[in-house]
Amino acid sequence: MAKTNFQYEKRQKELEKKRKTEEKLKRKQERQNAPADENPEPAAPAVEPPDAA
View: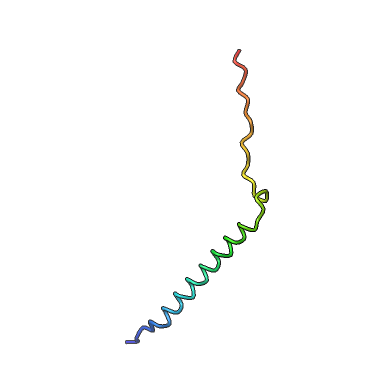
């Protein structure tokens, strides 16, 4: 039976973890550099109550 190459699996796992961390850091920096007005929250429109008559 073939022997599992644990070093290869460990290296792949480490590379995947490093890649995810770098992507997360990149997204975080993009959010910090983006101006606040670029992605504004949609304001709730002012709804007037119907006239009670």
